Length: 399
Image 1 (cartoon, rainbow, N blue to C red):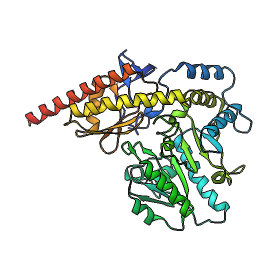
Image 2: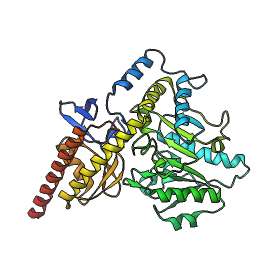
Image 3: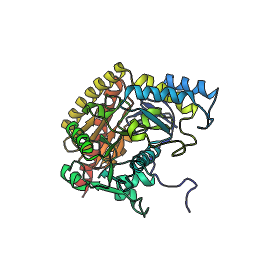
Image 4: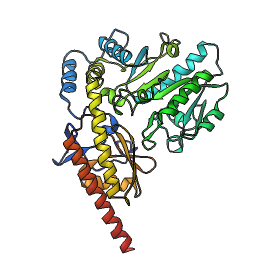
């Protein structure tokens, strides 16, 4: 008999009842160090006072009115995002998945408005993740996402990650957009080198193609810049944002240049909940904190400290870990033993991490993580690796 809750997750046997900063408290009272931050969502940690105050104040005034009316918080947050980025305009959604849907629609509508209805193909990259919607799984193309959900939305091509020649070969007159994560998240914390992003921008300009960046996971300060692509010195035409922008409240956005978005006129897209007053109150509070240069400088400093300590962890446990990779506070430990086993060993040491492809565990802590918490992270990850190594040796000897 199917459970009343649709069983699409293999959930850990943990139930958290409260949180503060980088720590979660389980129903039995045990505290866990959270290095996953709700999969890069809780950018400011749990129960950040500014976010609690923002949502409390707004909840006492107005929750929802729909986009049939003016919502001042939307204008305020849009102005902040435009002021801080390449974008000229912003549309607010509830999630990264919805942002992906709009990004694809916007790109195709752009070429339709120019009378180029054949220019509908979107090129994506193997190992990518753009959400679970029809457009998202078609853009990513991986069998794990698409199996059993055919026929897939047409108009997508996929090329190997990092294969420049395959990308060039895939481009023809039907290609209207290329979509890429500056740092792959689900794909195993794989950053795209700055020179490759620059080359991609040049290629799109040469071939008259829109460039879409998916910064749902790597954006909002996670790499030490407000958005990860800023390190490369180039910008996209369209960008998907979510996760950290709401600090835990469901919020996403699509940012775009005037040229890319000009065909999105009244009635061409919509949302019932997107950008409602509650979401905007939280989003504005997050933006005011995360976009501050001193805050981003601290992210960079702490990420350097964490990475240095993780490199030491790899050196201590070369039979458990292969290497560290990633950018800022979006780091991955590539494992030699099964990553799911290491995550389970972490539960025993009261530390939470997140799995990814390529046998990687993701470390996506709150951007507000303290140095003391970083020390605790290394102590607990070291204990988890030791626990896993001991169990592996015992199993081998028993065999």
